[in-house]
Amino acid sequence: MLPAMRSAITMVLLVVLAWSAGMTQGWTAPEGPAVVRHQNRDFVRISTWAAANGFEVGWLKRDELLGLRKAGTQLTLRVDSREARLDGLQLWLLLPVIVLKGSPMISVLDTDTTLQPLLRRSDAQSRSKVRTICLDAGHGGKDPGHRSLGYNEKALTLLLTQELGKQLRRAGYSVTYTRRNDTYVDLPDRPALARQQGADLFISIHFNAAESSRSLAQGCEVYCLTPAGASSTNSQGEGADTGSYPGNRHNRVNIQLAFQMQQRLVRTLGVTDRGLRRARFVVLRDATMPAVLIEAGFLSHPTEGRKIVSAEYRRKIAIGITEAIKEFGKS
Image 1 (cartoon, one colour):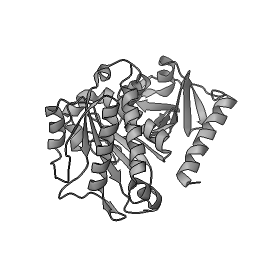
Image 2: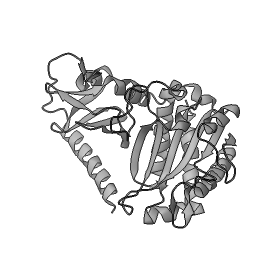
Image 3: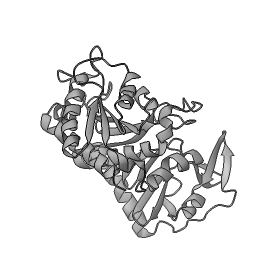
Image 4: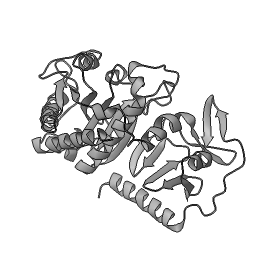
């Protein structure tokens, strides 16, 4: 069994055992204000937020791992970490969970732009009007992307978008592309093309690679645009003072689409869940419609890389993405 899979299974077992034993035993909500200002950020007591949203809350592992649950929904939060899980899926918060005067707290930025949209992801929205989808094959032309097993990323992203286009048309969607062959398209031109083509969704396709520990890194991850005033998942705190971009108009729907996409890909492919992440990639910043960027696997991994160069595996990826879009479009 892969180490990442063992870790995920261990986490699930820990959660199940803790909840089965009664996770709220010994939980006492500390006294103090519900919202406090800390390092120029507003944080809310998790017990207060949980009660307002109908959750039971308690320690799964004292002073380290919190569990929140209500009918049909389970959320885990790790103290001093941005790592969280919602209904078993890996989720990266914008700011770490902290403890102030004995009270676990989460940023208001995360309750407003991460948790609330995902807890209401079944709400009927304009997403029910999705008809045209623009597919963006990453890299191309003079930009080969990653290279592994004798393949350039640019060739494999193009093959995947071609297969995905077939699957989407069979499902009744109209499909457009930012490139149909091995040509170079400037990053700002890609979301601009989607806008010109009247796309309702923008899906950018990529494959990952790891420079170190090449035999270990694997799995899929899906990105949506970082909200204004927050740092991106992998920015080590940088960018927290960044303002808004056109793509931020769709923050709520972006994260709902990204969650649906990550959830479906993990289930369909049976791969390591690297989580829903935030970034300010140009293609996401400038998109005037809901947009996500998918890293569908690691070319550098000796096993996963061989799967990616297989047409049958790319067909499975395309099926997963198509199913996610269909589910996303349901009210």
